[in-house]
Image 1 (cartoon, helix red, strand yellow):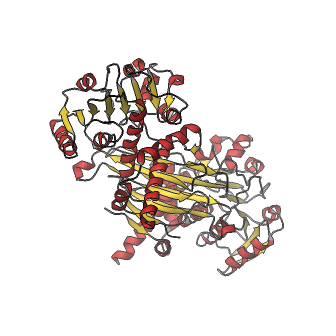
Image 2 (cartoon, each protein chain N blue to C red; image 1 turned 180 degrees about the vertical axis):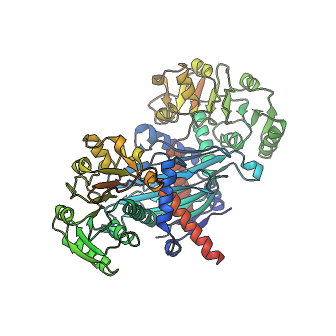
Image 3 (cartoon, one colour; image 1 turned 135 degrees about the vertical axis):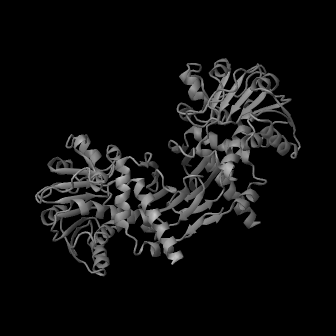
Length: 319
Length: 319
């Protein structure tokens, strides 16, 4: 049987109104409970022009489907007038292996499920009062992380640090059009000094966030390979609670991987986000705690978001 | 830009007339010369119903494209009236990561490139005179291996062993319709006693081929996971030349993996098929030699066959 092919416009339409926080947090819970089969990430690297492609795949036992997601980042594409990110998600039937649906999302679902994971982290780890959201970076994720916090964190003030004035201006215009007020920080340190909820979203290979104040939560999403690093080991060393989407994966990649290498964190102390969701471990315990959540991206997020899209498409068709 | 979506019928049309042996042997040469980037195979296993999905991906440096191939085997599907094999190939642009073409081949290209690899192995390793092709197994690969030998090995007599009379009957009818004469062997040993070119094509987990005569070449294609095993370690121990599509991969899976574990073969003695193709190592040296080629499937075959399909589609469109 020919697979259903879903375009980006249909995907965007399906996403509107779906309860994505619930879908993604259920995914993390499955993952940490051991209900998900999620092999190590496949990776394909390119030198010239530089690019990386990640293949994430897996399934939740007993589900109808399994998912293979391919997502690429080719960072010189904007020079050619092309988006840096690309990709698609493939949904297969778990009982027969048949290809059910091709989600031609051009990487959009990866962007969204990553942003939603940030909201899940904030739901359990952000301080009760957030007066200003701090953002390191000005790219797609810098914008989506803030926008997908809506409904979870009641704050529309953003303090952003970016490398150039023009990238910050573009970022500011995009968010202000959506009802946020955005100020520019001169340094990452200025973000750290003024924000109790900070999201790092860059592909930096040198730590940008070097220290944070008591009562701060940091979500790191930019660092998804072994060589990238945004949050310094010293920040991990001072944290009261260190959380990861996948402890196994963060041994190999992400900011935590560098913190482990520096001896700043004992792996036994790291809690999985899914264990907090399912109540096996407490989230933020005290207002003055420093918490960090390192998100490197797990296939269970891709499974859950493609399922949410399929469910929404079915619901719209049957209504 | 929306990817081109190519149906199975269009793929079959494109394959007709393409020089696939040349395409695949060039792929093996690239692989063994180190020109190909081919990360380890991704694997997703299912218990109930049993199934396995393999994800192979990679690129040849300097090529226009990279390829991700997903191929599934769900062995109870025939009970539901569905083919056991499924899958698709995705062709992306190497310079931008954009999805170029989706080849909806339902696993057909994997079947064909595996059969063509058998022809490449026979081209360099089969004895000069083959009076009877021996086949262990009666599935799709048992048929295609024989059919794709046409043009490489001048022989239309087949001696086949299968578990049941009905499977052998079906196999015989299919091949006889294509001009072959097919006899049934009572045991794998009978195949070994009467054939100097033998192809093993089953998912067996216990060795079926336990000894061969001098002057025999064996191509093993059925064994592609760590637990499958068709060719006994004793056959490897007696071989004059042991060949693999990928020495690295055969340490982890395939018949060779079992032969290594049994101490029957020294890894330093194993020659890569691509090194024979590019003349770095000799193929069959003497009529009386026993040669074995263990094929576990390498992404470079998927790269080459999808490229052959794209080239053929372009040629048909511009003609």
